[in-house]
Structure formats: C-alpha cells, structure tokens
Length: 486
Image 1 (cartoon, rainbow, N blue to C red):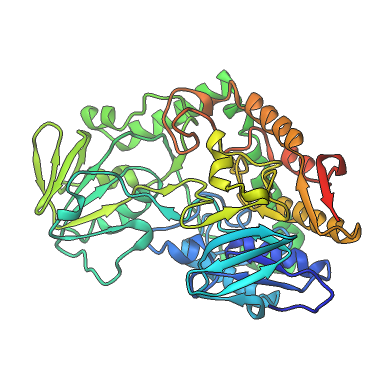
Image 2: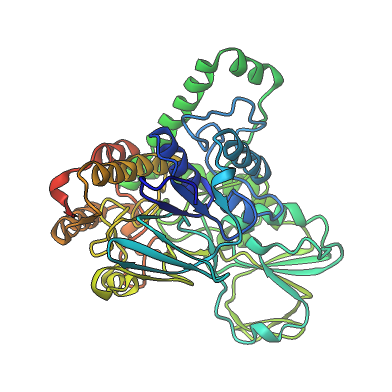
C-alpha cells in the first residue's frame, strides 16, 4: 500500500465515483497512505459495468460530475454511459489515483481486531489497515428474478448489466423481462434489429419527456471561455431538480401538475387505448423511480413488438409461458430487472467488535448513522450507504458530502491519538428514528412496491429531504456522537 510508517493505512473498496471522491479528498488533506481495491480491471463502477445499448444517466451531465472537477464539453444534456466512463477515467488520471489502485481485488472478509481491520480478498490477498471505507455503492449486484425453469432455457440469456456484446440480436426473437429504467433505454436501441420483441411488464412506470438536447459547439466554447457560465448552468439544473422535493413530500398541487404532464406524454405518444391503459401506472407519481424517454413508447408500438402484462409462469427451453397458459417463443432473454439495492454484505462478511456481524446488525433494519457508520464497527465507513440515495437529484452531491464527513472522522481520530472512532449506539438510534419519522407521509411511503423499501415497507435507501439538509447534517462531526478508543 502507498504510505509511510507513521501514517494510518486506509483501504477504499471500489473505484467508482464514491471511491475516487474519497481518495481525492484524502489527497487534498495530505493523506496518501491509502489504496483503492477494485474487483474489476478499470475505474468507473456502474459506468464501467453497464454497457448495454442506450445506457445513459437520468441526471443532466453538468450536475452528474464532481463540483470540483467540471467537464465543460459534455456532448448532450443527458450523456451516454460511455462519455461518463471517459470522465471517470480522466478524473482518475488527473488526480493521480491510478498509482493507488489495486485491480482484481474482490473483498470477501473484513474483521476488526485490536484496532485494525484485517481484509481478505477472493484472490487470497490479505491486508491490515486502520480505516476501511466501502465505496461499492448501493446498486452493483444484478437482480435476477426467481422464475421457474430459468436455467432450462435453450437460447441465450443475460442481464442488462452483463451485456453479451458477442451475441448478435439481428433477426432474433427477443424477450425483455422488466419495464423500468434499463428496459426503457435499451428497447428503443435494439427494436430495429430484432425479428420480434416481447416486453414482459410487471408494473408500468410513470414516464416523462426526455428532451435530450445536444450542446452546440458554440455553447461548449462559451463554457470553455467562461467557466462561470458552466457553473451557472449547473446551478440552474440543480435548482430545477431540487425544486421537486415538495412533490415527494406530498404536495397535492405539484403532484397534479406532474401527473397531468406524464398522462399527456403518454396520450401524445400512444394512440391505442388498450395499450395506453396497460402502460398507465396505478400508483402516485414519484412513489417509484421517475423515468424519462421520448423513444420508449414509440418503440413499443412497432408491429413486431408486444407488451405482455400477464405474469411469467415459467421459462422453458424455447421461450416463456405466462400465467394465462400462453407460450411465446424466444431465442434470447434479456433480464432488465435492475439491481439488489444496498447489497453491502452480498459476497462478503463484515465482523466488527466482539464478533458482531454486519448481517446481524442489519437484521433489525438496514440503517447507518448519518448514512456512513454503524455502531460496533469502528473505523468502518460506507459511501452511498443506507438512506443516502436521492429520488430527485444527483447522488454525487451526496458522495462529496459523505467523503468530507468521513475525512473529518479520520482526521479527528488521528488528532486525538486514538486508534479508533465508533458511533455511540444511542446516537445512531436517534438518527435512524428521526430519518424514519421524516419519511412518513412522503410519496415513497405509499403503497407501491419499489426498490426503495424492504419487504416490511421500511424505506432504507432514500434521504427524506433535500440535498441542502443533507449537506448541513454532514458539515461537521459532533464529537458527542462518538466514542474514541485509545
């Protein structure tokens, strides 16, 4: 690991936006004794892994980039995944992160003992570090539906996050399982190639117009000449997105306005009443993730495309059977079924003080103090941990605030000569109670089923307020919430 004998050793797990931001903030503070352990062979995380046709971000590019490293020549308002991945690689190079990264290191076990974390990797490597920062993110484990006969399918099947670029879709009979964000992006891209496409929809989603415009050469030149104009552009985007908070907090007026807009978009693009009814959600706008596209509805109306709303009964060798007994032939199945949310313990075991397992701590509800720490796990931090995801704005705002907060925790521990910092159980409990209370009455707490909630209806992913309140909460650590061990 990079560092000297008199500085604490820090491990950052994951080289996506979260891990890179943490590393940059450490370097800015003069701390260089860290290593980023990455399971793959490149930086980028989500944007490295997701390469399906049409992959893009649903947050405008100027806002979906670090505030301290603006990119002034984004090609579009909402840039494609490849351009975001290029940005990640550029940031890694510019800030000298590559020399700190160890690739091919997938974390499997982390055990705290004697003021140190012993971390073990799938490749057999072990390390002892003072601080452990998890930057694996909340959405990185593909979610495959539990469907009978899935393994008996005789054709080619894959998840959208594990796109099979060697499989030519030209002339294929394709089944897309899922109708949310990834399906909405990839279907318009592949529909012109395939012989037929069946989209298996469990629940329709609210879809707004995308209006994804290109930045002209003149606009990009203005940003280059006057970076303050790019900052102003970013600010205007930020304020527009932040203004949606009242919608999620239950504003009936705003809900009526946006619901009318979404209904209008559907009516403008889908003439057939039966199909329109099948694509109309029965839950409040914002209860599930809001999607945006100008090409999704037109793609679904092509002659060789079918929207299948009957549930899937089983998968057989030659295709899919639905619950009404209908068999539909397929030679390719694409699972556009998203990710398992906040899979902090999937594939790894985390053991804190006195043998406490993270999986046991989370049994009573996935939670974290100020979204980054758990009592009983000293010197362990989570980026994009529980209740830090946003339903309305850019998570990079959250990541930057969390990285600065974690840096303060590390600095305070070093300054006091302590070997560890741990959050007090009562402080963590009070924080979680406050978060859950604030989530009551929000549109997310209503009856729709979403990845925001666990099976008991507890919202464990989302921050209940705006980004201003989050940054205020994370501005500086409160020493009375922690205990230091010397």
